[in-house]
Image (cartoon, rainbow, N blue to C red; front, side):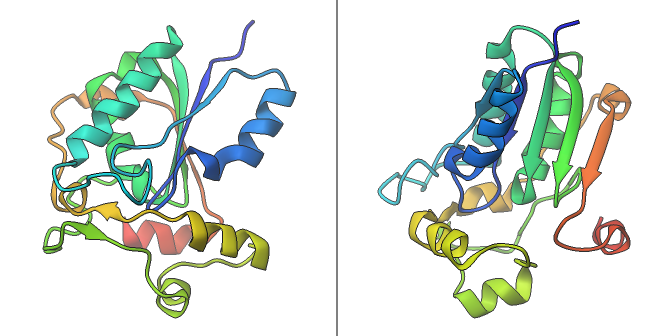
Length: 187
């Protein structure tokens, strides 16, 4: 049996590059892997003024459809909400979901955010909000140097979920930043 293709979607402030090590290891094991950079996160110079969560959902749907058969979709952190919306839109194309330090979010991620974009917080603020244990100083520095502001409208928009078939998509939550109970409380 041929393994399902894998689509990897990074979280806030990250591009496909954030999955390079994981994608390389999966490819070395013979997997068909695609890492996605969501709209507005291509570069610091990208125009984020009109990018919405719907744009992120569309981009993920396109990557899944391009695989040509049911896919394992792995979403990280802030990509949990648009990833979950993908399971609502095209559940028959998702062989399995993997939520990495995130979960199947339903509402707007930050409905009161009023900016055009949300830049990477200071190192102190980021450490307070996220558990970055296990990342080397080199990895943290790469993150700081390559981080791209998150589109503000993508934070304000909530996906409209209407297809209960999303509830039948096999899902796994990988909790590395916080305990399972902390994620359950957050959800």
